[in-house]
Every structure is written in C-alpha cells, then in structure tokens.
Length: 130
Length: 219
Image (cartoon, rainbow over the protein chains, first blue to last red):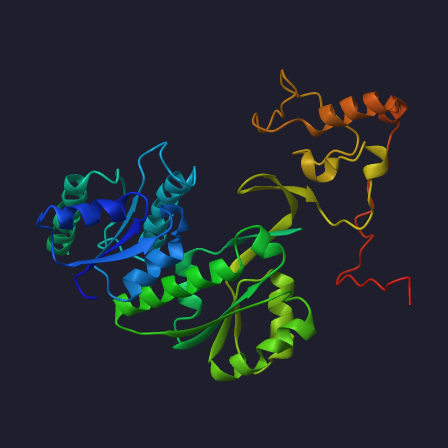
C-alpha cells in the first residue's frame, strides 16, 4: 500500500463520481485505492489510523455534499471524525500524513480528480518538509 | 458513573517505553460511556502507540481486549491467557479496574492509561459534570437533591455565599449555575423553604474510613 492514497468513497456520491471519471476516460493518479462505504459516516478514526498503519501515504474521506447525505448527517459526522483523526495523529507526532474530507456530488468526476491531485500535492509537500 | 480522562500521550509512551509486547485492556462499563476506555478507545490507543513506535523505529506489538467490568475479578480473570502472552498491561479502566487487574496478575506491570476524575453524569453529548463526592454522609435530603459539597465552588454547607452573580451564576465561574440558587428554587417549588433557615454543623468527613468497605445488608 506504500505511497498510496486510501480513499473511503461514499457509495451515493464519490463512488459514482469515480465511476463516471472512468466512463468518461478521464485520467487520474494511479496511486489510489478506493474503498467503497455505504456512507462517509461509516468511517471512524480507527479506520483512518489503520490505513496509515498499513502504509498509506494519505487518507481521503469522500462524502455527499452538505445537506445531501443519504443518511442525513453522515457527511458532517465524517468531517468531525477526520478532524479528530488529525488530532490523534498529531498527538503521536505524525503530522506528515495528510488526511482530508471532501464533499462532492455523484456527477462531479472532475472534482474527484481535482481532490486526488490536491492530495498528491500535499503528500509531496509533506515529504519535502521532512 | 465514574468519569475518567485519558492521560497525556507523552506520559503513556514514557510508561510503556521499556516494553515491546503489550495488552491494551478496556472496560465495558463507566469508561465506555464516558468515551475514554471502551473497545473503540482501546483500538485507537493501540493503533496510536503502534504508529508512534513504528515512526521511532522501535516496533511494538499489541493485543487488545475489553471486559464487561474490569473492577470485577471474575470478569478480568478472562484476560488470563492474553496477559500471559505480554510483557505489560496498559489498562484504560478506572483506578479500581487497574487495581483489580494488578491484584489478579501480580507478576505483570499494569499501567493506567486514564486518570479517574469523579463521579458524574452526562450533561450533553461528550460533556460530563461532577455530581457526587462519595463522602459517605449523604446530605441530599436537605438540599432538594443537589449536592452543595460538589456543585458549589466553595463547597458550602450553609449557602449561598452572597457572591452570586446576576442570573444566578457563580462568582467563581460565571459559566456555572450557583448551586445554592438552584437549591433555593427547588425547595421553594417543593414548599420546603424552612430548610434554608436551618444551620448545619460542619460535615463529618470521616464517615468513610479509608480504605472504604461496605458489607451488603442482604444475604
């Protein structure tokens, strides 16, 4: 899993967006491992920490847009948990592994790619800062 | 219920520094409810320690287990096989749970990962407030069910102190309600305001001899 971005993708938004990116033959970074989840709210701090333990370079949680969550508050909960995970990582002195939460709609493949590129940029920056 | 909070990470890391195989043990009762020592927190702390030690180039392996109540010998004894496999135990239970563990497994170092702080109740999601000082001489019958020893910042038995702010807030902490103001209002509702005019002798702080021991009345 080294150098990979682990992306937890909500099956109602980010997963169809990734699917659409493929259907439209859009290029996106190769260092990506998508994990389909029923809702971004399924993701807890422990999933993010374990992804890093397995060697992920960055973790992304991608959920529905604000107010559009199929499970009402899953995306807002995910945002809080991502913040909490960042605090947990910082607590043990690991601040060079980016974690991010982004909201996107199922018909936004370009945004999906933009997010991935942004994450790769952050990975590069954190490596250079080391 | 018993409320605790996790110790600073640096302190935990220092305690377990000489060990490379650890059991992170949680408790499924009070500390689970106050989000500090349940199954979830055990997983998170174990993962944090593995990540930290791996970054330092000094790998640690962890076992994780949570028992229903770590303060009961019968339940903690279930961890016997796991304790045998490790060099030390990091317990996320309250002080009572840690000591039960220490009593059962005398040959293993047991370290507390949390500070046990008070007996309290949840005020809202993620916020707990102290309610009882476990003094062993309950006074609640005279104060409308509010403990001034714990909830009054000055611990006054004959209150209020006279420094209550406008809106019934405490003069020490403006965020906090004055306990005696609430006592007055509740006794007023109950038609028991005469209790406010009584003078109470200084409290007996020796009601519980340390260490406390209680024998059940029923057989």
